[in-house]
Image (cartoon, rainbow, N blue to C red; front, side):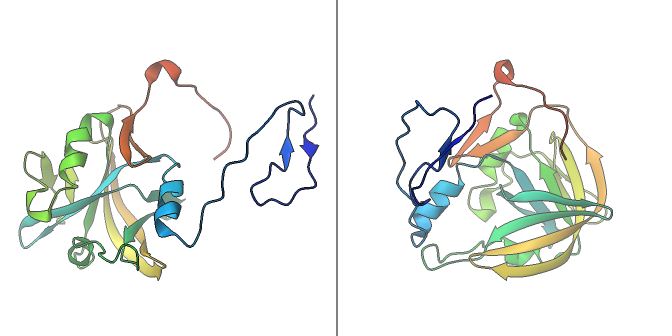
Length: 206
């Protein structure tokens, strides 16, 4: 077993430990946490899934695509989403969320790789987003994207402004599994799909 070799250098840009004492690791520059563009670019190195949050407003579908979705609790079933609300560097917050947050019920669709075109469409201007997108609305007014891998009917539990985003907790009222396909991913400001040849299964953990 190789024991990591500790370093006396401070953590600022230095390698604190390595499992290979003979390796030569070039330290990358630190992210300037005062520069929101750098912070955003760095955080987008974390790959996420892609979800569509949609509802009926005045009889018309309104919705948006997001990458900040999290499963929070199973008892009771709760999910969370983060919505851009505006900041000094990115002053324009979401134009769609002020409409959606007033609706009694929201549909959250977890998108699969087959939903790539829908994800791209839902990133357009609000009046163009559902052009060519297959969707359905249930009796509650939740709008769901057809062909997604998971459909959730949700109600807003609470919302709090944290920095540049609104953190919104959602009570999951109904859940329905969709197509058994690979998820659509978001990484580095790009939509991506899994490489089936390089997938590995894991066990354990939560």
